Image 1 (tube, rainbow, N blue to C red):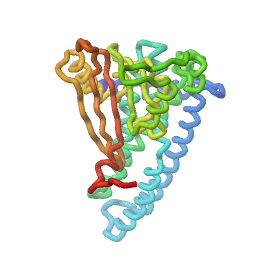
Image 2 (cartoon, helix red, strand yellow):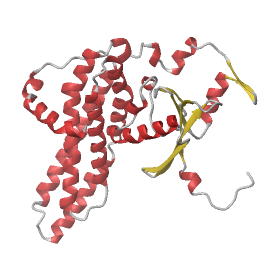
Image 3 (cartoon, rainbow, N blue to C red):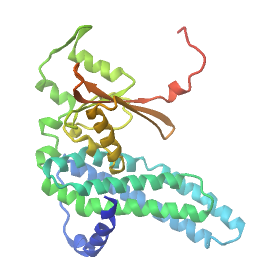
Image 4 (cartoon, rainbow, N blue to C red):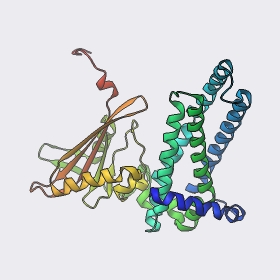
Length: 329
């Protein structure tokens, strides 16, 4: 995918005048693209504020070779730019919506959807450069390099959304899918009338499915099940969910639910489970200030044949900080 980034960027630059001149669709109210375009406009306004503030700082600071006092003054101004960048929560949520809501619809509509994988890779790069912008820098030159790359990637993505991704999606994706009228992507409340009430029964007891669902929502865990065909069959939806999910992901290949850079790891885990060489895989990482623990389990029949994979994710920050004992309320 990385090898395609350069040629695609060159092609887009070559046809940019035609893209700019081509009339963009008007997305109807209630359509997914109408909502995403509204967010796109807000991100563009955020970029304009970043550009204006960065230009003011650079004009005021002049050359990076100015005397130390002027560098210190510019460094103080950069703090305000960092604060603006740190406030860009919409950027992350916008990318997550594209990955969880729009990209799956591409896969349902067209087998050739490599473009969205490239978009995802660029989104990851933009967020990685954002992290660099907010980190400590050895020099002003390093900060401006990080900021320039961050701004550059966000602008690239905005342009491609407005002029390529959204118009192509509008022509390619059936309206009932993009407006949420497809029963496969209805909300839980809308699905209630489609599901026949039943009872979960096991040797250790039984629960009404409505009770079981509430239990899943209360567990301090995010749970997902991937079938033997590598497609997502179920995910729990607690209010504390760590990584966002949407109903459009149901039935999607799990390889397409991860950033392109993680697909090789996902494939390795699934292969080891199917071959029987491994039964679990553990990961832990920092997401902001939180410590996240993720475990994948191979789910098997009594005879050992592979049924699928259970993904369990937990915010272990508070547990990791525990000390001593607590025996009383």
